[in-house]
Image: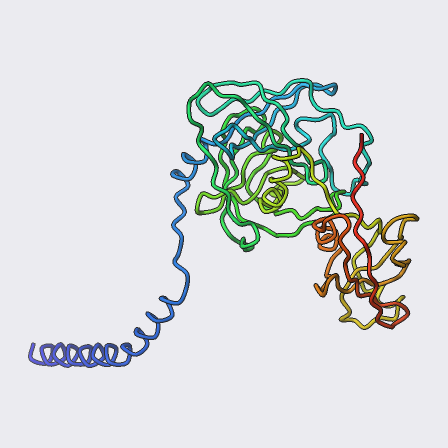
Length: 361
C-alpha cells in the first residue's frame, strides 16, 4: 500500500508539472491564435430552414402557353410594383439552350400568348412581359396585384462568390411547388453553351425542369444566381446565370424593354497551345484570336483581320472571348476604343468605333 501511495503521489506531481508547462507554453500560442481568428472573416451559420422560409415568400410559379405548348417554371419578385425575374425561354417559343449547340439567330422572336404567375400564398395573376434579353436568357414580367404588399428579393453579389460556398436552389421542379435543394458552387465562369455572353455558375444543388427562372441563394439568404440549365444524362451538374448579369441589364429592361449593346462584328476564340504554336507566340501569351472580321462592320473598318491576337481593350487585359464580348457589349454605340493586338509577332494599337448590335424584328 505504501508503494502504491508513493506511485500515485509521483503521478499527480508529474501530471501537475505537465499541466503547468502546457499552460505556460500555450499562452503565447493562444494569444497568437486569437489574433489570427480576429483577422479572419466570421463564420456564417447556414440556417437552411430560416433561409428557405424567407426566400419561399419571393419565389413564384410561372406558367406560359405558346405554339410549342405549355411551359412551367419559376421566378422571383424583385420589386413591390410587381416586377418578376424569370428565364426568357419560359415565355417564348425559343427552346432552352443546350451544351455544344450552335448560336442561332432569331429573326422574329415570338413570345408566349399568355403568361400567369402564382405567388407563394396561392394568389394567381396574369403577367405581361415588360422586357426580355435573348442573349442572357433573362425576362422581366409584371403583374398588377390586388393591393396587398409583395415581399421583395434581396440581390447579392455573384462576383464575390467563391468555389465551395454553400448555395440553395428554390423553385418548382416538375411542378413540385417551392422545392428547396442544397449544394455548393462547383465552378464559376462556365462557357460553351451556345451564347456569346455565357458566364454560368456551376452548382451541384439539384435542379430539374421547372427550376428554370428560380433563385440560387447564398448562405446569407441573398440571391446570387438564376437557375437556368441542366445537363442531360448527368447528375450534379446544374448551371445558373450570375445575378450580376441581371443587375447590369435591369435598368434597360425596365426603361426600354430591351438591351442595347455595343457591337464590333468580329468572331474570336480563346488562345490555346495549338494557336500559340501556329502563330509563333510565347507559351505565356494571353489574349484571344480573331477568326473573322465581318465585312462592313466596325471591326473590319478598324482593320482587324484573321489571326490577329487581341491582348487589351482600353488597357484592360483580355483573357477570354467571353470577357471580350462583355466589354464590347458594355460600350455605348459611337464610343471609340483602343485595341492592342499582336500581328506577325509585333504589337500594334488600332482604334475602333463601337456600333450597335442589330436586333431581330
